[in-house]
Image (tube, rainbow, N blue to C red):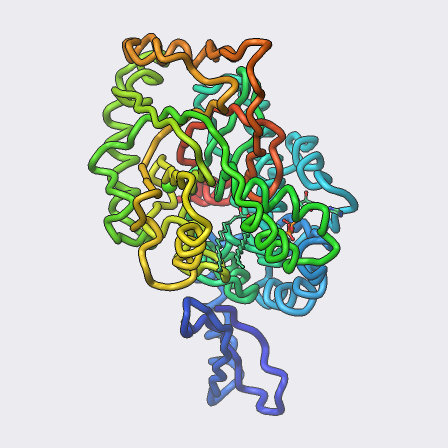
Length: 471
Ligand SMILES: CCCCCCCCCCCCC/C=C/[C@@H](O)[C@H](CO)NC(=O)CCCCCCCCCCCCCCC
Ligand SMILES: Nc1ncnc2c1ncn2[C@@H]1O[C@H](COP(=O)(O)OP(=O)(O)OP(=O)(O)O)[C@@H](O)[C@H]1O
Ligand SMILES: [Ca+2]
């Protein structure tokens, strides 16, 4: 990995650090020491290795690090200082470190940067999913503002960010890290950052009433997970255990919610949620998806792109649901190593919409339990799963009237765009109980939402551009 001067008595030796793959997707940093017959040869080797490393333009040289000292077990600073900083130092990476002082500190700090981010090759997040989401918002919002993209438009085409986000897991679930890296090991994350790995990600934008609410990169959950998160927020002092306690409580409450879900299915070439394909580096579904989408949309106007890009048909499902989950990625995490939707893809522009209808407590328990073993959690009569590119959810008291089923697709599009769905309840109607959505573990106090998935790729960073110019 990095050549460095040897400190042992042999004056003609030098040590090279390298990455070794270990079990369960873990990476280790190892050393190997070479002995040279003379000082001159030693210097030649060190110089040659250093020069070759300097040519690797995708490797970061300067990083902006945010540490959330309050995430997970409150160990983020310790993890960074003990496990990550020494590796960055050995790799010759310089860092500016900010320890956050409040929620949204990192997001606001990033939003406030104008040209000041140019010196960095990436932003590192030391924390959990909520913290990754915060940093994502800071970077994406900064980029859209710079390019005058109106984020309140549900069909706005997001401009890719020029900086990559590195994730050092130090939260309670660390689902985004586990899903992308295959493990929640801080050293593995640090080594992926050092060697300059990158992975495009699907970003799901969430709107209500033509107002931008949030981006999600893991789970958008209504009903069960929304209730678990809402309850667990009151127990934050308990650390990761709060989810188990809130989970049992929510499970016993067995609340269900009525509403309708409208969605645009993904193309058949984008696979099926139950095809047992696993999204790995270089995944052909993700590559094919983004290529064919780009090719198809190349010669269309912006309006045509929206209509075509959103698919040809809207489907609707109505009923009483224990959970409505949109998994943009598999959502694998230590609690559920295959995740909520094991075959979901990281960057295919789709989410897997999992609808769990009202069923018995025993049935729901069996469904949940299957997230922890090799059994198929979708193999229940009360569970359905669809791969979708966009969807909207209307709770019972705001349901879309039946007459919309006769609408043409373009009329439906127009209504989605203008949010022409008004509550159809009357003053005498009972207002059905509503849940909240959880978005990467943060609560959205809205029930009616519109969501659309797009792939977010980081553009070539400044250092790569510089190197390309030199060539
Ligand atoms: C019988 C055992 C069942 C175990 C079921 C485990 C299913 C776990 C599925 C986890 C999926 C996580 C998806 C990631 C979401 C993240 O964006 C978010 C932010 O970090 N984390 C959570 O929402 C954190 C969500 C944590 C949810 C924990 C739910 C625990 C349920 C316990 C039910 C117990 C029934 C007991 C009956 C007596
Ligand atoms: N200094 C701080 N004080 C209080 N809250 C903070 C601070 N810095 C960040 N936060 C907020 O804490 C929230 C939770 O943090 P984080 O995601 O790191 O941990 P977690 O919730 O325990 O883990 P996970 O999201 O993986 O379940 C984030 O949404 C973030 O906005
Ligand atoms: Ca996806």
